[in-house]
Length: 87
Length: 357
Image (cartoon, chains in turn orange, purple):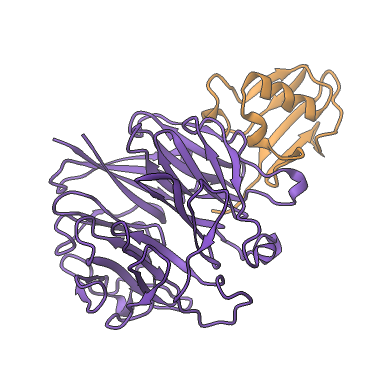
């Protein structure tokens, strides 16, 4: 199970979503797919059409900057960050 | 007694001010929409739903919806995106129009999406492709920072297939077939710059309808009036302190009465001499008079954006305008006197009013 940490800006948008959840997924893309299946609309909040990660959504896997294709192992930590943007 | 709701879209969420029909005492609710930058908020007069067009720097564009006058909200962006193959992106949702569950959404890059299920799902209605020069104004590289794309939508209350839109920096367009085909409605407008096409290239800031044939607009260069439903325009700037401004409102019961807020042109774009003033014509633009009672007259360098002035439909209409520094002013007597009904809001993008029975 990947240990997924989400930004606080997401939790008000999806009832029942917590900032830290376990997701069984083999890649960042698969994490987002799983989040989308559990909270419809989530993909739009994290990705643009393509899909591509939104400009100011940064993902780190085990503290390394990641992309949608970055693989996960069973104990990966995934941090989804709403990067600082504007005031 | 009916309620009066003023819907305020700001850079940090939407707010609702509520009063009765007297419109003297107001209570403020908000911020809503989780503090997302909100560009426009409107109420569907038939269903009563409120919609807010918002674009988060982090989480993209969406339309928020409230079925309980703003107390609770949900959001959706399902279908509210261009195909990746088009090369275009929805950077923001800028403008809304809603009636009876049909929601039109104006976006940047310029395009109009439509929902027919009350804002749950959306599909692309038009990009106005084929209009003169559209291949250039569709190019994201030609769009300046802050560009709104479709900066306004205006419905025809008597005909669902007919509505108008403003493409920022391009002009006003009308459709009579639900958005399939479009006609530029810019004849007679002034433009102080070279244009590649005769019928487009005009900077229409705000268009309002007074009745079935009378339209007004605040343009980048001058105020204008149309007596033939937008087919031709006549400038009515003479008598005003500047030709530039954004906000405009047409009296709902007197087609010859129209209000604007002239601003200094150039980079400042605040009220001239630091005196907050709304200007009114009661003769369709032949003459103008300033309305200042209750508005700050010293050191008030206030700006008002294109969607941030409106008027209600009571027998004695009330006027409302919000500033880019977060003040909201209201008049319950057709602009004769004013009061500041909110003082410390975030920068205000738009102001709309609804009467709820």
